[in-house]
Length: 104
Image 1 (cartoon, rainbow, N blue to C red):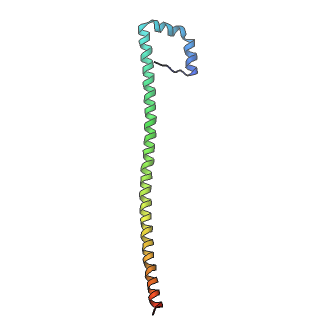
Image 2: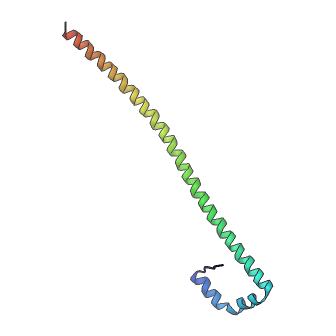
Image 3: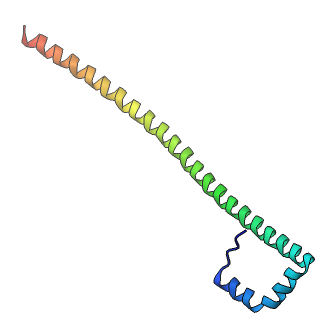
């Protein structure tokens, strides 16, 4: 098992060295220490999971917004395409009519 301590925690361990050594001599103290360490680890792990969940929820919201924007953009582009198609048909009709009038 590897224990990683911050500089502040390391200084506190150095200050309380005798007390810590006594705990390690006492089985009950060792069990309390292990339970405390396990509890701290579980709290840290839970907090990390919460952060990841919040991040994933944010990204999900962004994806939903992007999907909605893509749908709106598609609808807009379909309308523009339809309008261009109408204009194109109208221009072709005018061109045909002008050719027919010019050929008479």
